[in-house]
Length: 459
Image (cartoon, rainbow, N blue to C red):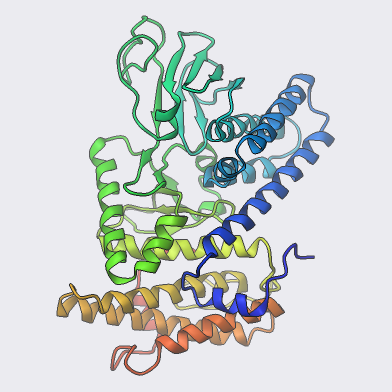
C-alpha cells in the first residue's frame, strides 16, 4: 500500500518537469517521511539482532540524541537528516549482512546523530569510532586521527574532538556548520596536514567540505559510505574522486557559479530549483577521461559527476540529475509502474536494454533537457552558432523523448498514478514540439540522435 495518495492533476503537473510553486517543500517532506521509515526499519532490525551490550547501549544513546535534536529544532534536524550522505549511510546499513558487518554499520548512527544534533543546536558528548584514519560527520567534513575512538563534545560555541592518543582539537561551532576552514596554528587548533600538532603529538585536523558559492550546497569528496560502493551497481562504475589541490576546488566552484548564471539567464525558475534542491556535488571518475553523471536513488539531491568541460555542460548535468532526484523522492511515496524481469526496452540515450522504471527516469530527465536547450537557444546573449547548436541539441533530446513516451504508454506496466505522471510528460513534450519551438529540419532518427549526445548520464 502506498503511504501517499497524490491527486492525478498534481501528478500530471509534476510530470511536465517544470518547477512548481511549493514543490521543493513537498519533496522535502516526502523525503523526510521516507527517511524516518528507513530509520525505524533499521532500529527494528537492530533490536532483533541481539547486539552486544556496548553496541546496544550506544544505539540507545544515539537514538536518544536524534530525538533530542528533533525536539530542539525540528526544521534544522530535518534538513540535516535529509542530506545525501545520510541516505548513503542508511542504504549501507540496511544492506549490511547480519552479524559483525551489521553491528559495525550501526556505528554510523552515532556520526549521523552528532551531525543532526549540531545542526539543531544541541549540546552533547559522544565517543565515536574512527574508520581508516578519520571520523566523518556526514555533510560537514572529517576529523583526521590515528586514534580508534574520538570523544566529541559540543557546546553553544565550540565543538571539541578529543582522540584517545592525542591532544584535543577545538573548532568554532559556527565555522564547522558553515564549512569554514579553521585557523591552522595555535593551541587547540588544527596543524597543517603532514605536520605534527603544536603540542608535538600525533597530527590531527578538521577538514570541512568545500562550500559552493551562493547556495547551501557543498562539494563532497569525503563520504565513506559512497566510497564503499565502488565497483557495485549502485555507482554504475563511477569512482569517487578526491579534491586535493586548491585549484581543483576553485575550478568546481567556478563551473558551479557560471552554470547557475547561465540558468538564471535562460530559465530563472530552473536556476532556483537547482539552487534550492542540490545539496551536494560529488566529484567522480569514469573510464579514462570519460564524462558521466549519476544520481543514487538512496541519496537524492546529490549530483555525482565528472568535471564538466563547460558551463553549458555543467548546467545540463545539474538539471538532468535534479530530475532524477525529484523522481527518486516521488518513487518513494507512489508506485509509478510494475516491474517485470522479462520486459526491457531500447531507448535512444543508452546502448543497453532498460527496465521500465529506468525508462521513466530517463524520459523525465531528457524531457527537462529538451526544455533546457530550447531555452538556451533563445537567450539574448547567445551567438548565432550557439543558437543553432542548442536547437539541434533540443531537437535530439526531443526525438529521444518522443520514442520513449511511445514505449511507456504502450507498455501496459504503468500504474494508474504512473499513467497520470507520464501523461504530464507527454503534454509537455507536445508543447515543446509545437511549430516554432523545434528547430526546422531537425532529424527525428533516435539512433542518430543518440550518437550525437553524451551517453554518460546514468538513469
